[in-house]
Image (cartoon, rainbow, N blue to C red):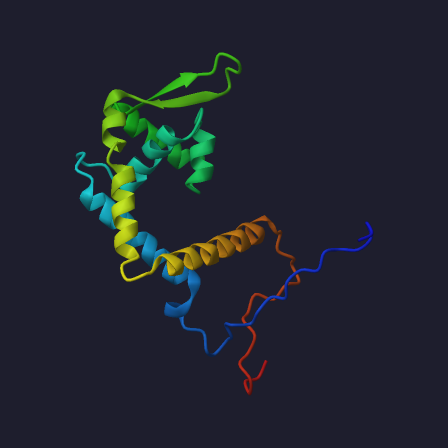
Length: 182
């Protein structure tokens, strides 16, 4: 293939059309509903006091990531750095995490869990496994593998979409259904 030849992009489908669009059948709606159930179930099952998703999620990431920073957490959790700062202030006040200025770059502040923070996040991985398995009740192993492959494709498409800059001339309406005026 020559350098001048571009890789052909897959054609964008038109599964959804103006006039026939049903919110409850959209991937975003269904994924959000599922995530709300996961968060709600985990909040209910975590017996660590008054921690909520907004608090245990950063703690969990601090535990899982190598050299986590406020910017990393904000990016991973898709939240505003100011909101993440306020959350970390509350978690630090509860004695669950601490901030440590980097010795290599004083502008960087690394985050770590205290022993109480470690204890608070300890049940999260097992609970996530339990909840995930409950969500997949009735799926065969092959169906689960197919489902995961499809979700990864949707996630990849979402990342590509996120990276694109919308053009001002782009229309954001769904195509009209056959027989409907455009």
